Length: 180
Image (tube, rainbow, N blue to C red; front, side):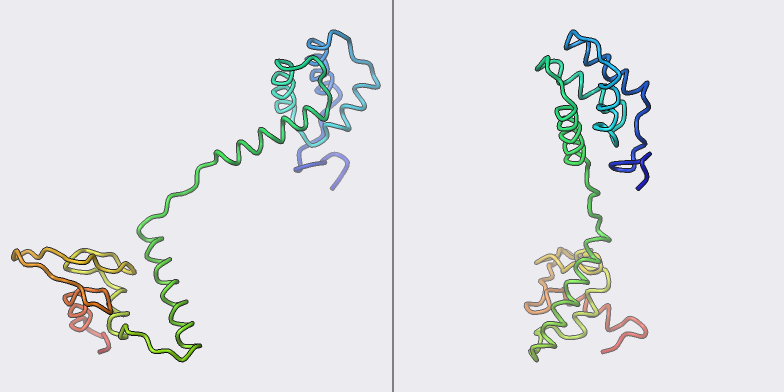
């Protein structure tokens, strides 16, 4: 890290920029800053942008007439935390859910294999989860809904252990290249 970039890889403010921040502080304090103030504040505020410092001085000036570099830094850090807290997270999609479900199944299968247990699900049912269900439209990796209304007016209930509809199992069995 060079002397030019301090915290957060932000370039150090110039003397003129620090003087503009101190001019704002002088407006609230009522006294003019000296050359020693410019040097001290420049090193204290290294790593923070002029805009952040101006915003912090304005916010502090509404509350108190005694503004210090420590108070400015505290307000800048609070503003950054607030910005991070407000950053929206990406919503998960159906594809993400299918990938997460597949990863979960692989993890559970590994635990069962390590413990020597047998799963109630057959390999055919596990293979069926990799395809779209023709009865309820469940996406790959998602288990079927409890009941599905068929086109002929009937209902199809999913199997107890595999939690997939029989038509989904049949679709895997009739798919070319599928193992039974």
